[in-house]
Amino acid sequence: MLNLSSQPAPSDALTRATRALAAEQLVVAPTETVFGLFALGSSPAAIERLRAARRLLAPSADSAAPSAWHAPTVAAAIAAIGAMPPAGERALRRLAPGPVTLVVERNAPEMAALRERLRVAPGVIDDGRAVMVRVSDAEHIAQLAAVGAMVGEGLLAASEPARNIDQARRAITQSGVEVGAVIEEPPPRIGRGSTLVRLPSAGGYVIERQGAMDGAYIHRRMERVVLFLCSGNTCRSPMAQAIATDLASRRAAGDGYATVAQSAGLSAMDGQPPTREGVDAVAQLGIAWPGATRSKHATRDMIARAEAVYVMTGTHLRQALSLDPLARGKVHLLDPSGADIADPIGGPRSEYDALARQMKVLIGQRLDELDAAARRGDGADA
Image (cartoon, rainbow, N blue to C red; front, side):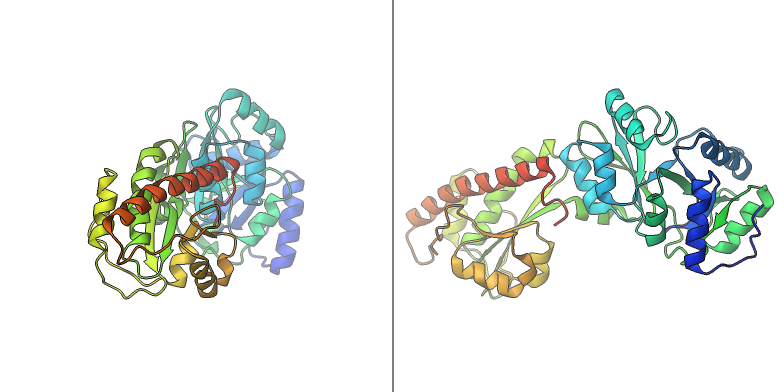
């Protein structure tokens, strides 16, 4: 049995752990959440050791229950799992790496193909209907996961995950579990188990167990934010926000995540009301104005958080990129033809009506582009 009092240097510990996994032994290592007990998923002998350890550590638990596959990278997880609904791939790209375990539903042929890719037996990482996937943001876990199909779970100590090395040592010593290597550093920075999120085959996502990743944060990360910019944020961009909100609400049910339209002005004074003509022109289309909107000055944070940014003129495009040079590639003119959308301020009501009709067509085209990109897996991690 491993001498748990030894404390090798981190590089030595990683080498020993890598060798132990390859030798079909168990490894104790910290993730960002808690200490975990890991095994090589493609090794029947290692899986039997992991299940035997589970019986010793938590006698009341189901020792045959699947463990989470720890993928080395998000890209590796997506490649192994295969095609998913837009919300599924979005969840992997936007929630991982991090303290979340994703339960990805697969049909029988898809599950068989996944097991074959990872060389794992039925029941190791799946219950026949869904596979458990984790991408830790701890660098050493990614390095260990690159050894093969590494599987594991939070190390149980008195039915609680081990938050520090002392709890991990005590659990191993008292239970008599044999391990081949221990990585002690760096310690878990969170000290709480991962959040469990199910990705149904029909689309969408469901938070099944609260944990280290807050549910409100998950919902924010899953949102697709579309930002419209003009000069004063009193007519063109709030009109676009209202129209986009309406169009997105009619098409988003199949995506399984919300599209949130926002607007701001690159030269705006905060707190100004929208023009009456703009509100009435949008109402003429049968679209409700999105609440008591007031003008907001555009900020770099707004642009950085948005998945797509649409501006009205070439001048706005240059201003937006000057505000956030890193946004190049996601800031576009609203009109795909490259034409400017003129400011109707001071013009007759008919000009606003024509602008609203034009915007409805252009925004529909832009949302179609975003939906197509989501289906291809492009831009989901913006």
